[in-house]
Image (cartoon, rainbow, N blue to C red):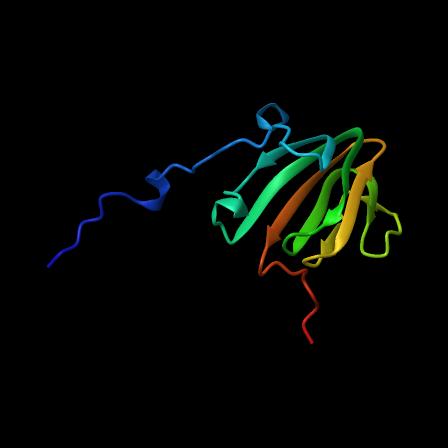
Length: 132
């Protein structure tokens, strides 16, 4: 018996979608001030085990202090700002750096100059830790 392949991997188009500023939106609620969100995945509130989105902080933008509902990583792609965790102490953060917040941990993010970040949230999200 001979199998015939009807398509090759080269014939399958790549599924593209945008996270450009023009497709971002301002979510409902009072946690975000001058911040837009461009989702990359289905949100956890819709049953997804994890979620990822691009957050764009305008100059003066802020994600107000609140507890993390699930573990999360904020990875700064462009710009700079300040973050704080459970201790409330504000620390600078810039492109190429990331922070991890555990479930329930109070945290806040702000930017005087503007900041673009990838935020990944999920029950099994944890930062990379060096292998022994």
